[in-house]
Image 1 (cartoon, rainbow, N blue to C red):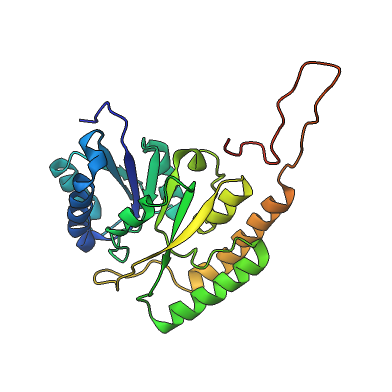
Image 2: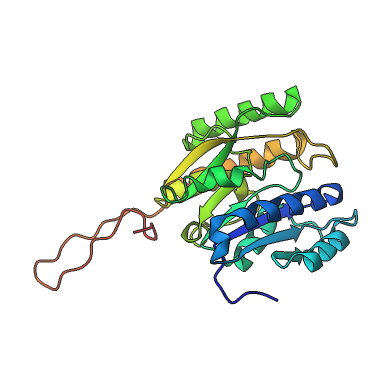
Length: 261
């Protein structure tokens, strides 16, 4: 039964064929969040978005939801991709702060506490994998992609491939989401005037399952998505309203309508 109290935190986790990781992930999340002082006065919620799994993840998630009141499940009828899964989770999440993370246990659940340390200062807190536990090819391709992205859209981020982030609610309510846009959350947030930072987080080797992303299925899509973001940056509306001495005062507009005040 869903609590009528507003959750202090929502955790949104897209998954695709992660059955062998789910029990440990849920146990760790529930243990961490139940130990937080905030949970004494407000609930938390954990959303799993099953993006067309075929390995039995959906059935296992159903059982875990029955065991843990905080666990919620959204199941797609087929695979739609990570941005779609995040969008579905964002639309259901009720927390003022929203964490996104991967379901493969490579993110360290304990680093939610690290992100929360910066939540009062920034609108978006992005994890940066301090020591990556991936193979050499993935590390090199990621560094190259980050270099190219920074040269084109100038977001200043070092690791946008890290899917471990904490948003304040007004950020996700403003961001335009299209397929593939999850890779550019920092640039999109900056474009609308939100404050963004990057903090070191742990990264663990994958123990079960396999990665859903590789060089082939990211390179061309990533380049096209990056150019779309650059187009949005160049074409975003910029204007200011001057004071009208002849009539009633008009509030001054910020450079980017919709920015936080």
